[in-house]
Every structure is written in structure tokens, then in C-alpha cells.
View 1 (tube, rainbow, N blue to C red):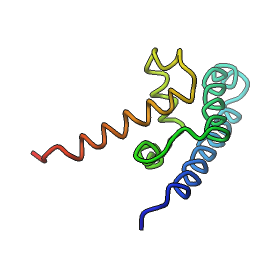
View 2 (view 1 turned 180 degrees about the horizontal axis):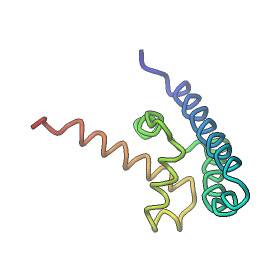
View 3 (view 1 turned 180 degrees about the vertical axis):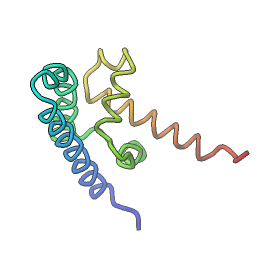
View 4 (view 1 turned 120 degrees about the vertical axis):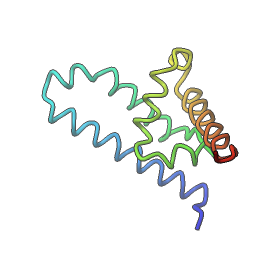
Length: 115
């Protein structure tokens, strides 16, 4: 059974929250220096979370491509971090662009004949 888009949004938001909570838990275990070193990542992940909470940026295949990730917040953060052009844009645009690229990659991968 396929999830409706609304259910998929709920699922993704829950997965993002779980990822964020796990990340924060690890920082707390790591102590003060670990926390200091992770402030840029923590801030960025929090900004990503805010986008999903207030201006949900994904739908359709882009939503599915991120929702199917085991750790969607970490995926979005790493993709954002790799692309200098995305780091100069707002998070809403960056998330949408990352998800669209991933949806296209998956579609291309699925359309290629097996060798």
C-alpha cells in the first residue's frame, strides 16, 4: 500500500525529528568540546528542521526520494554541505534542489537496463 502524500509528510517529519534527536543525544554524550565543534552542523540541521516545520518544501517524487532515506536529515545536511552553490541560497530552495536531484538520480537508475 502506497502512502498518501500527507502521510508521507508526517512520516518524513517524524524521521527528521528522530534524526535530530539522535544527533543531539550524541553531541551531549560527546561532552563540551564535541558540542562546540558541532555548532555549525547543529545550527544548519536546526534550520533544515524549521523549513519542514513551517514551510514544508517537498512533494511528489522529491518527497518520496527523501522520505525513503534511512537518515533524511543527515542526507540533506551532507548534500547541502557538498554543494557550495546551495550554501549561498536559502534552505527552502536548497532542500527542494537536493530532493529533486535525488529523485532524478533514482528515476535514472531505475530506467537504466540491468547489465
